[in-house]
Length: 155
Image 1 (cartoon, rainbow, N blue to C red):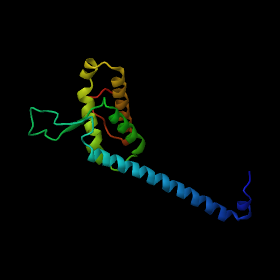
Image 2 (cartoon, rainbow, N blue to C red; image 1 turned 60 degrees about the horizontal axis):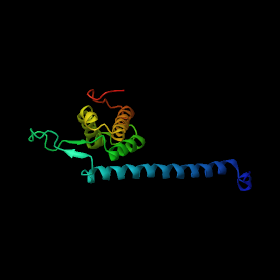
Image 3 (cartoon, rainbow, N blue to C red; image 1 turned 120 degrees about the vertical axis):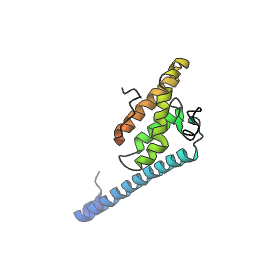
Image 4 (tube, helix red, strand yellow; image 1 turned 90 degrees about the vertical axis):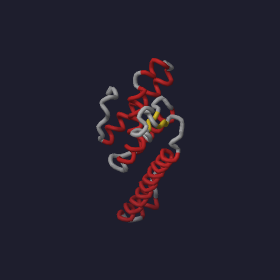
């Protein structure tokens, strides 16, 4: 189907109209991703008490590890957040903030729950959630060019 309106116009005006359409679409897509990142940042900073975030790992040594957090990798919300971050983050934007707020606590959770939770709770749903979270963690680390912790099994 041919558009008779554009065939009348000269080529430079047609190209300009197509460039306007493309720039509007790219701008809309950029701001959509930016708002999703901001929503995730607000969720992580304001809702540190969602099911799966725990503080004070080492109760014996409270003077050094009072505010150390870890994230439960068997939680479905954690799996969703890891997958969402994998799709949203690019190479360098706010990499340090994401490392401090989400990636390192997730790493601590993967290290803590790696071996012993499988034997206590052998539910298939929990284990697939763990493995999907772990896979998202490794893909995210590769995408951001960050070295992952060697205590976590690399598949």
